[in-house]
Length: 468
Image 1 (cartoon, helix red, strand yellow):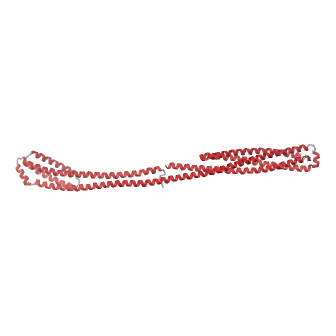
Image 2 (image 1 turned 90 degrees about the horizontal axis):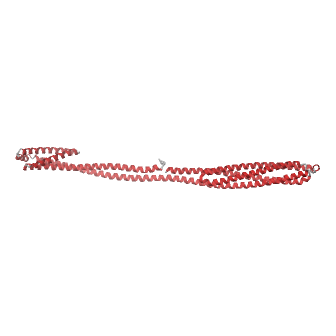
Image 3 (image 1 turned 60 degrees about the vertical axis):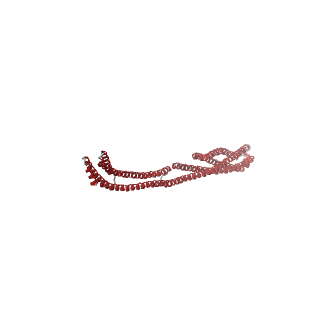
């Protein structure tokens, strides 16, 4: 599981760890280089000590040679050379005493210092004898005492001992230097190899992790895009159904309008027939009343009842027409909401916005058709009411109006039939409106799903952006 969510941290970590390894490698190399330098300095010191030891041996020999020359030739130059060799040997012995750190070498140097002091004391005594003018006595003392030869031999042994010891120290330091160099090379190769191996392993792991995260985000984007495509396809199907339903509604409303106009015409014909009956009844009302009023009254009552039922049916049609108008208004509102949701959906909802606009136009046409039908029905009701009044007066008419009354009855029957057809058409309109309402709701829901899918896609894209 990732400790950090952002890839930048892993990339920085991938560079930081090798850098730390390089710093550690440089530290190890620096330590070993310091050790090699220290061993080299010690080796140089040992070599200098060996040279100084050889210089001491040479100066001691020079002291003996110059003293012999002074005893033989009494040459002041020999004394100067002797003093120079003495001072050089003394200076070198003092320097080596301060430089040496080996205990055995320091002890040997103390013995050499003692031999040197004894030799200087003996030589100075001979020089004093020569200075007193007794060169022969000085020579005999040199020959008889033999201290010069003994000191020279002892000093030579000590110097050889120091040389051997210093050679051992040099060999040890050379071996230590070689070991330090080997350690330096080993540390360099080990640190480089470790850095390379760790870098390869860490880089492979980081690359694998990055690929997995990017693949996961890409899969999420692909899934969201698939869901959006499916939703859009479903909304296209629903939009087609909405268009078909609206077309069906428009056709039904046109048929309803034509039927209503026919009813109005037939009602007008019935009203005209009733007026003719009234005109005919005005000339011989009394005679016709005595002979045929019972039959005529019965028929006119039936006509009145039919007209009343017609008025009731027209009232129901008017109510249904109001319902259709309300459904058209609801459809208009749903189409408006669908347009709003399509705008929110962005590019994916442009097609739905056009379909919703067309649905709103068709709904407005349906509402206007319903209003026209309501106006026609109101006219029919007014005509029916007038017909009722006329039929009430027609009960006093004569038998001559029977033919006209029959025509009125036929027209009224036709009006009834047309009214039934209007009722069926209104039912079809209601069914179509319900289907349109359901489709509009499905469209709104689909657009909401599209918006949710789009938001998910945006969130996924933002997550991928933040990831990088």
